[in-house]
Image (cartoon, rainbow, N blue to C red; front, side, top):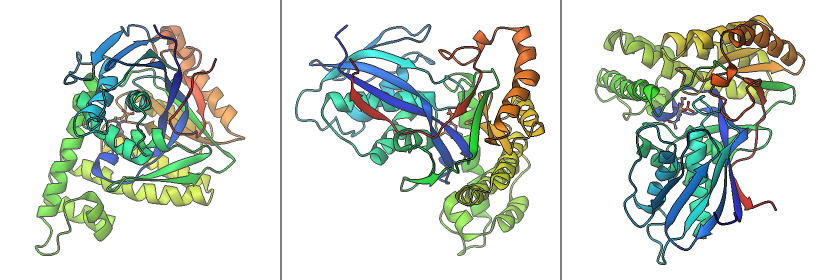
Length: 406
Ligand code: NG1
């Protein structure tokens, strides 16, 4: 293996509020994490990607950039790097138009970001792969443009995801959450009050979006499209805004929308619609609460969000519900599942003063009994020490490439 010359660092993200609405074009409020996917790499004169990974079970992957990029088997880790290459080299990407032969990369992927946990490890790998390939070819792409490109590219893996994760990964700012808007993509830093503490707590169940959870996730995106069409079709003719959630929620109040939807939509899809339009309102309110450091209000909105994800969107699990309830009992300001759900993690908001008590309560009432039943090694916290199924998240900087530290 050639000695690495560069290190790319691409953070995961934790979403604070605004769940399952990015793919509906509605704003969300995540922050970039202080845990990241890293690729240490050297550039190659041949158009080849050759990468190993330190994660268990991840074999060496190698593919060429001068032939159509093909998907590896479903669930194979290299699909995320292939997605990055596909987005840059094909599909009218910035490397497709390169007038000189493409250069490749050789290196090793490493990560301290739990995988399959709703913390955007997949997008961090796509972004890391894209930044490495761009660096190797001396091409620069502005962070927001690259976020849009990698969001589209990640669909190569089969998930019909939104654009929150890649934007959070690329635009993160230390000490700030990010309000992310779509069409066009924008990222606005929102300062984090000094006293707020964020705890990520794993439910110890993997949320495998490259496997089982993909079908459930893609079903939600499809249902949101269907119910939107039904609501728009039922609006009085002439008064219908364009067919988007943003236009609809901008033109008609949430209460009126819910009223109309109740008359036009059946019982299967109505709760999905209810989640989407109320979550949009919660994001606006939460952003204001954060700007004015009103922790209890932000926390209450998180709890409402969790209930809606549990009851209307049906993406929670008993373990996630239990974490939320233990955290609230122990004095947290708010708690909710984060990311797609179907397992993964919860995010808990505490003040500096209450954080230690909340962590203690979760260790005693959630993790201790499970530690007896089975090893925490089974947790999704791959390379993170198993005694750490819970950690404090700090709002961090976005993805970057640096000289390899010698
Ligand atoms: P996670 O849980 O990190 O896989 C997914 C989507 C997001 C967003 C959330 C739910 C991808 C790459 N990520 O995140 O776009 O829709 O679920 O809010 O599809």
